[in-house]
Image (tube, rainbow, N blue to C red; front, side):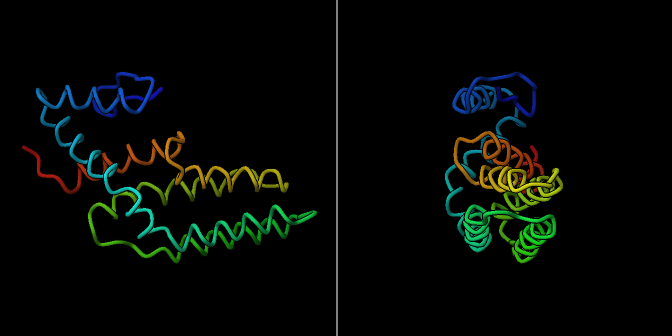
Length: 162
């Protein structure tokens, strides 16, 4: 279930949420602003993810492959992998474009929060990697949440209030 960030009403899918925001946008300027932000993000999401997170995702894929191939991981190995992911996050340049910046501001805190999950075993580490990858996988809940959060950031920071 997805919740409208402005009125709190719940919807079964992304399409019904967008339809709701579109319908409300005729009577409420805040919904109109959010609809504009959301449609801008959906239209350009692949480009934004490629521009901002390309190197991070390549590095994450490499780490994921190495972890899956490893027979056994010691606690120190797991901590080293998490440190490597944190370094990849730190290397992501802060974008200047409003659209890119909104996605960046939405994704980075989510990635950092996932890195704080319990991580004692290889299975825990694979779960963390999977959740981070879900942020960048269309139609996954984490991806949809990131897009909605980025839409709110974009509408609040960059679109003029009427």
